[in-house]
Length: 146
Image (cartoon, rainbow, N blue to C red; front, side, top):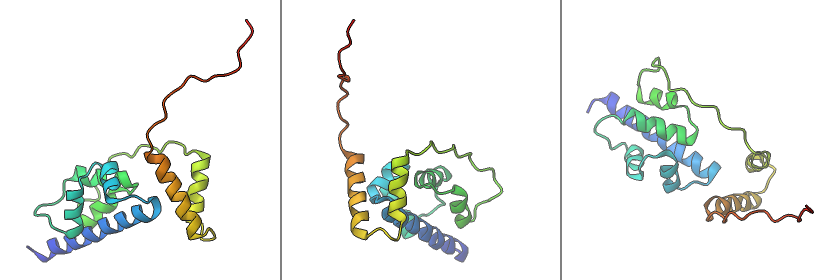
């Protein structure tokens, strides 16, 4: 295996490790959650982290991994030494964020908020994200005179 290939593997492994660390720290995602949200299997992600791949990762998987984590795929392509001039797949605009969610995210990155409070925010968000959906019930309002 040529040195350039080994260097690319090391660089891509470091890129994937950092992406996973960021997902863990900022979103409290586990490896399973990253796999679920990106559509890339845990086995594939683990091979990338260890630099154990015989041929280059499939571009579609790299793009899916990056997009699932909110990373521009061009960054990964650069780490892999792929042609940056190739047209990138257009990334759709993110939907507008709920103001309450935005406020929570600001609190999670605010250095003045205690780690204990950040922990409780993350735990509450995690609970809400994975609880079973509530059954849809028709709204019961005041009866109207007809």
